[in-house]
Image 1 (cartoon, rainbow, N blue to C red):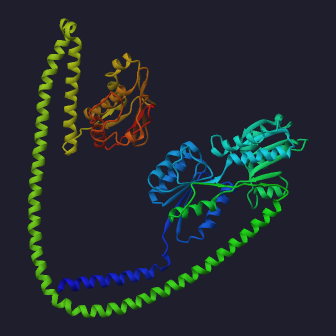
Image 2: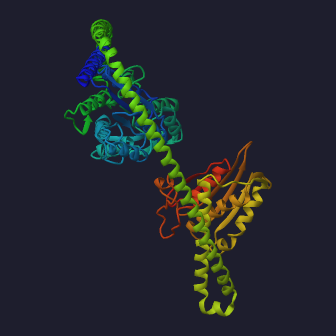
Image 3: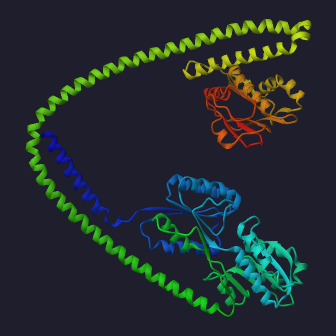
Length: 619
């Protein structure tokens, strides 16, 4: 009966808690989604319009969270921003890649994690995405070519001002434009320049080809900004013949392509939809598990003097409607807040009354059960104390067993070292015997090499275990680190010269005094330089660079060896880890031991590498 009453109390309290929470969060009845938008560059009017369209559509989904990041035209920065979004836990990623190839990896990584990815405007080099939203740049270029042929009546010279080299829109628009004017044999593209989508860059490139501007009849610019730049340069050069200028984007608002056509700054512009609204609509179809299209190609149209006024009127009407929607949403939000406040007050009153009745009835019952509970607790306390004593006893035994294992390991390692040392000495004597060298020279060298290797591995194991159990102490003294490194390199010069490998220490100072344990640090650099020699091909180089700041000495070992993959670099200092570097295999202990010794000196060690591009180690 006691158990049933306690269970009833828990269920009752849980029900009231759920009721209270539901009242507090009445406004959050819809699922909360977090959408991340990575923009390649957000400074131009076209991309600002894209963002505005997204926000307009998001205003219809008040339960969604929107994270925006502007890469400012930097592909590496855009990759890092996407990684930060993934760390924050987004439900869907919308990305406009700055460049196709550099952004392919992070888009595929996001898609493979199961996070939907919508690629907008520009594509990557892979089909690993959930949906694409954007105009067909090839068709826009082709439409521009066909319109240009009609505008010039099939005859004339054209200057093409292209976007950013390597970007998919620039490549596709160029190809489409070339195909669009093919049927006009009298039209020729006499010059092409890259304006990088920017007005100032376009002006700079056009000013460098001033003589060629005298013979053109038309300009096709890949966006309206560069089209306006073309008009400015032509006016400044006082070109006598009339020059037709066509741009792409046809954005509304102040400074947009529609205004340029209306003011006759340019002759025509092709609508290049930003796709902001369509991207958000597609995002919610995906998140809500509704049907959607993977390829969402937006349509375009030519804006010229025949329809520009109509487009301006339509945009004005859309803006007015959006303002009305925002006002209505503001009023709805105010009403929702009032409703939530009233709901919370009502829930509190109901919960207070019910709890008063429940706790009043439970008070008497609790008093009666208190003695039984105290007795049960006393029994449990005795049981817990007994278990605690048992755990302490087991811990002592485990510690003793661990210590015994460590002592056994240390002793057996010393036992290995003694016979190896005894084997090494007679092998070296036999190697000095000329007669034996003639008969078994190769075998003796092989024996000497492997015995020495075994002895070094045993020493590394002993040193590593001493460090691991905090029994390794360092004895530091002030020494010239430059002379120290030159002495170590001397041991490798013979091998390096045989393979024509350049082995050098560089520093702005000849005498840099550092406190360190000579014997311990010797093991570190001996191991690291051995690794570099092992994986550096003949005729290569290994350079040790020493730099000194106020309180820090940095030592960098650089080589042009076979290098490692990024995932291998992440694990290179782990115990017994071996990278996939062909036939040259080690024990996987040297770099781990080196790191521990560096840490004992209150230092740090890092590695960077690229496959077939060498390694860099920093201390």
